Length: 331
Image (cartoon, rainbow, N blue to C red; front, side, top):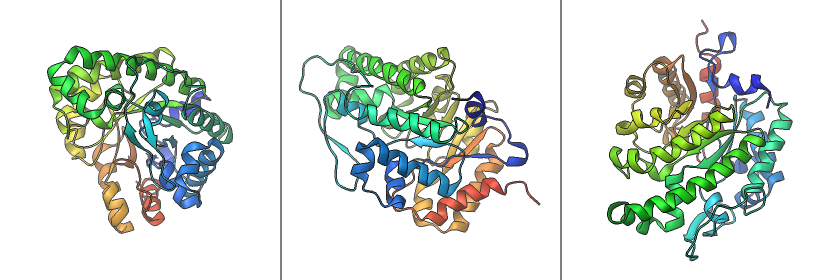
């Protein structure tokens, strides 16, 4: 990717062009507005590219997030996954094999679909638009591989076994992240199961932080920035998220004023317009929420949705989010 494209997402201020805005438009919302089934979009690289590029052109935001669903890597590593005709894929059963091993992201499961889409989107945008390649954080992937119930029991009762699963998950994600970077993408780590709504800050520090930090270290060694998103209430773990070394920290629907205080003036925040507001609110409400983010978090802000834009979100609301950034500061 052209270095200009990489750096544009992270500029402290955008001068005459206004603040950076990247709503998290994932495959399901893109599929809905493109009139393509979710199943086709998450299993076929051509359909994924068509949907995501159409959404990018329609909304005219500043970066493309290549995210299909949370179970891409888990499926490739042996989890049984259900892919409905027009809804998100979901975990059905964890692997039954006794020994888990990383897999080749260029060859196995739907990871090659994501990588092919990243390559093509980089080509279509001339390397001038940041293309963020989503990958799961090791904590979330480990929970899928072990089975959520067993994994959480292991964290409390058999931490050594939990760490073994985390190491395998991390090895797989290091390989996948490298492939994302080779494809021209910027790694965007999402760790939804590591949410503050599910685990304590102490547990995050012990069982999520070290493995995310390793991915961040790898990305920096390859010369690219990397982002981190953790779903839910992360108020109590913002410092730990920052300390992973991530170049930008994506926050869900939490108090952005407190997030700015806790993260400090030098951390780039991504977020955090409520996805529920985007789905159910009016454009003017979305605009006011976006303006509050801009007021409280600039200059180090990537204006975005708090999490993935829901499939049925009205287009007018996403456009209102983008327009708030475009018109910010104009008299």
